[in-house]
Every structure is written in structure tokens, then in C-alpha cells.
Length: 69
Image (tube, rainbow, N blue to C red; front, side):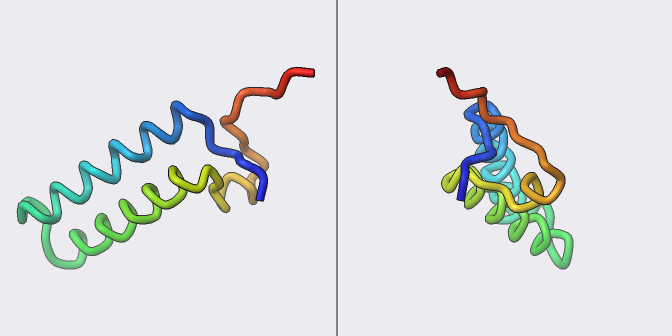
């Protein structure tokens, strides 16, 4: 797997994942929508840690800076 998620993208994904988790665990968002946000937050967190997003790969997107040399 080649990394396709840049550092700024990773930071944004982690912040969104934390926000979704807080919304769910504080009870602000519950039910089906809460579960969807929690799962989506988990996916965002996992892709931020791994540095690879399958959706980016499908559409040919890459937020990593170009390599020198």
C-alpha cells in the first residue's frame, strides 16, 4: 500500500474522529445516526494512522506532498 493521505489530511481526520466520538459518548448524537458517526470516526482514525485511504485510491486522489528526486 502506497500512502495517499498527507499530514494535514491525517490531522483533520483525527480531529473529526475525536469530534464524532465525543458527540456519541456524551449522548449528543444517539441512535442510528450516532452509530454511523462512531463507525465513520473509526474509519477516519484508522485511515489517518495507516496513511492510506481506499476511496482516494479508487478516484486517483493523493494528498501526500510530491517526493523529491
